[in-house]
Length: 265
Ligand SMILES: Cc1cc2nc3c(=O)[nH]c(=O)nc-3n(C[C@H](O)[C@H](O)[C@H](O)COP(=O)(O)O)c2cc1C
Image (cartoon, rainbow, N blue to C red; front, side, top):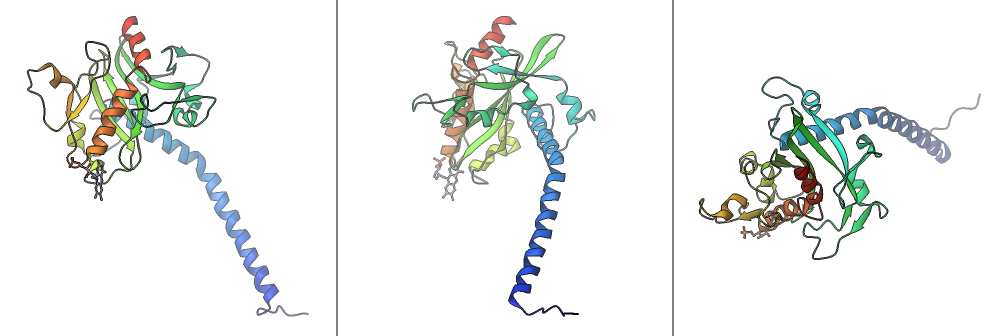
C-alpha cells in the first residue's frame, strides 16, 4: 500500500484546504444557528432602549420595580408606521418588518436633505418611520420616537420620549454612539440623562426650542423651560444632541405627526 507522504507539497496543500473547509463549514453553521437568537437579542435591546427613554425601566436590569419584564412592559405600547411628510398613519406596512435606518439608505424610501435643513447631519431622511404610543384608558400617555444625529465622531442613535401633553420631554437615551468616554460619551451618564424629564419642547410659534446651555437662564424666565445643561468639554456632542432633538421633533421629523396627534386628542 502506498504510504502517505506528509512532507510533499501537494499533500500539505490538500490537508490545509481540507482543514479550511471543515472550519468554514463549522463557522458558517454556528453563524446560521445563532442568527435567530441574535435577532431576538437585538429586538429585546431595542425594547429596553424604548422603555428606558420612556422612564419605564432603569438604566440597568431588565425588570421594573414591580418585577415586570421587558416584554410585559413593551406590550403596553402600540407600534405604528407613520408618513413623516403628512404625519398620517400608514396601515399597509408591518412595523415588525420595517427598519427606518435601513430605509434612510434607500433612495426610493428616503429623501436627501439640503444643508440648512439637515441640522442633525443625517444626509438622508426616511419617508416613513415608526412611533411607539402608550395609552391609558384610551388617552395617549407616552409617545416615543427614534432620533439620530451627528456628534463629534459619529452618529448618535436613540429614542426620545414625550409625556401625555406631547410638549414635555419624558426622557432621552442613546443606544449607539461613538463619542469620547468622559467627554461626549457623557450622553450616557444617568445623572445627565436625569436632566431631561420635564424639559419643554415647543415654543409659542410651534417650533422645537430645546437649548443645551453652559449657563442656565434664571428659573423664572420663559427660556429656562427649554434648557438642559451642556456637556462640559464636549461642545460638538452637545450641539449634535440639541440639533437632533430639534430636528426630529420639527417639521422635517415627527412634527407633522405630533401636530396631528395633538389635534386629535
Ligand atoms: C481626544 C479628544 C477627544 C474629544 N472628544 C470629544 C467628544 O467626544 N465630544 C466633543 O464635543 N468634544 C470632544 N473633544 C473636545 C473638542 O475637540 C473641543 O475641544 C470641545 O468640544 C470644546 O468644548 P468646550 O467648549 O466645552 O470646552 C475631544 C478632544 C480631544 C483632544
